[in-house]
Image 1 (cartoon, rainbow, N blue to C red):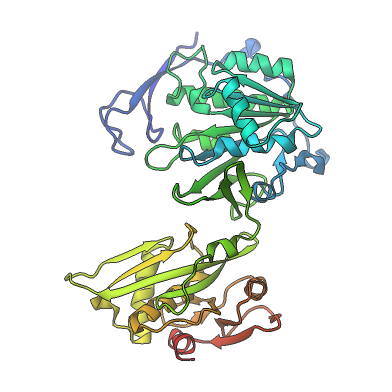
Image 2: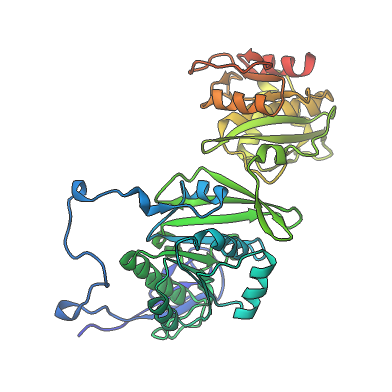
Length: 455
């Protein structure tokens, strides 16, 4: 007869240990190990496969790929991040900081999801009356939307059996508990077991499941790391509490790209889509001020323009300070070294601060040149033309290297009314230069600085 197995999980990082430890060996947190008794799964003739799951293997060529498996959520920005829409029978995890708008987003899409479908919204944090008040505030009132305030997993599965929804929304996974598990709700083992139940439900019955997940103080999803491996898609809802704009990005997506982003604006009546994020990111841009330059980066298949600001000031420390927000710190230090060695900017005696406006994270090579030009502009106290955009990767020898999707970037630059653009001299693709856009082809950083600051 199989025996039960006792293991210990870290509530911070999900690290597993066969015995209790005062300090987690993986993340170094103290008093975070919780006990979990794993019951053996039935084996042999007594084992039962999940209902609806196929017991026989099929050839890949015999499985039909039906396009109707993907459907729209009613929000173009969310569909973009999901890869073109939600997929039937998938399990999607939506995470983010408290109050960022996760519950509002999922409740808001119910207006469109309930068109020809049935949606069951399960909340473990709000009562039915509270959900009703929030739905009235954001204008959600479809006939085929069912509301349930419950945290017990068995009761939720019974409601799913009774309602037979096409889409299930669970808010949040940390509030659910399984009676067969003795741990408290929100513990590592409870989150793992409840997610597994929802995974089996989605795969066996074809129900699309959206799950809200909390994050811990480090910004990671609370619970075991295996939670992210179990689901089909992991979405992060990000934003600054002081600004109304929110960014939705995918950290994992089995049915689409993870490079796309969705931009929303939090209003009084819920979230509004921002179809033109470039215009939002460039709002309030100062004109004639040194230390700023516009970059054009690719977020998936979408070109986005963002403002890069830099401040270079005389250092009062023996070791100058370097700070980068929205740009990789090590990459910023590398660009400063190249600017000093190849372009003659004596930055080793100056503090340097880099900031990307709007909370955007520039992590592609095409942002190298605008960062370097912003540093040079602040160092020389000369402003970059407000109608100029810079695109290009910088090598260690100071050369400007080509980047991908250059035609799409130039089209976005021209659409937003910019008149000048600095690009690499050698481009791998045939350029289609828009009208009313002057192109400057440069081969190295020194030449780019002269074009940006001396004309």
